[in-house]
Image (cartoon, rainbow, N blue to C red; front, side, top):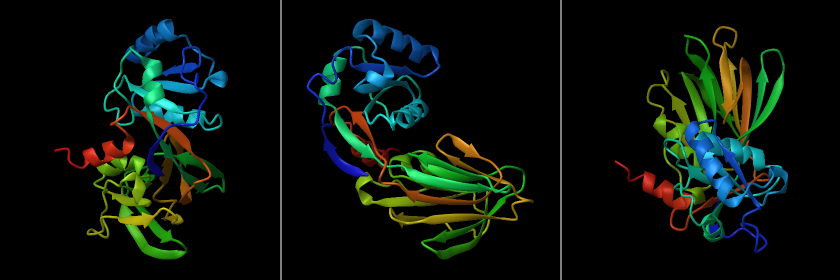
Length: 269
């Protein structure tokens, strides 16, 4: 991920009324906010817009980020949800000026390739994390191989996840994983309720690492894999690596960029 604040290269009128698409979560608050903004600034069709303004929480922001991948346009979030770590403060005023002065962060996703017990393969991208989770009452057993070398022959756990730096403050942090600055080029690997080995608390991997999770005793201990909001059930193996050929630009108000938020989160008590 690129940690340097930068202005996206856009035409001078890219963020003017008539060039903005508004996307709202399916909540009354977000829908009402969208209606007011559309009345004030108009609403450009998604396939013609220069920027998408996402209204909702972090979940809606992630969905919008995935949606714009093929278009290559930036996303500016405004919080109409709860936590809103990826969102800016909501305001109806001076939106074109806020967009024009915003700082940009370029995010790269993890690419997951999951293979199920019946041989089906499914690929998905994750801007937050890829997680493996037990499906039933019994714990999962997972072997972890990194760059072709088995690093953990058997992890007995509720699950395990690998996150991007941007996602390190999300599920990874809740699972007691480390927060990672955008510029660190590291991927946190974090167990979820590990039973054996009890003292293993995870690892920090280079962003170039190729990680393979093999599910042991998959017939007895079924396990699901989740990349952001794409879930694949009954997996037997899951490979994960960062895909730097894919990127999305997220816009933040000056002084409130993603790098600053990640640093500030480490001092929140």
